[in-house]
Length: 64
Image 1 (cartoon, rainbow, N blue to C red):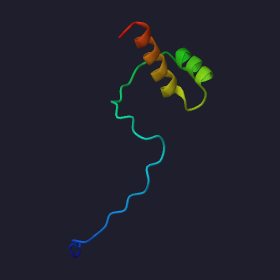
Image 2 (cartoon, rainbow, N blue to C red; image 1 turned 180 degrees about the vertical axis):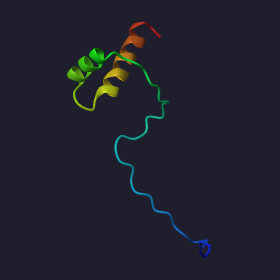
Image 3 (tube, one colour; image 1 turned 90 degrees about the vertical axis):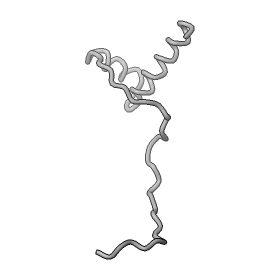
Image 4 (tube, one colour; image 1 turned 45 degrees about the horizontal axis):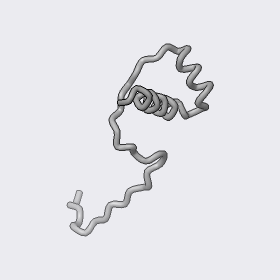
């Protein structure tokens, strides 16, 4: 294979979905019943947003 030319241009496809929040990923374990309640309240595809908002509210409530 010949070497790549110095003037190559890399084109990336635009990112799909929500932009990065600049935060770390963490996994939590919840009972299936809790997840079902969250999904029923939050709606399809909104579980992470629901949990994130709930944690932020609780931290504010506790004065952290």
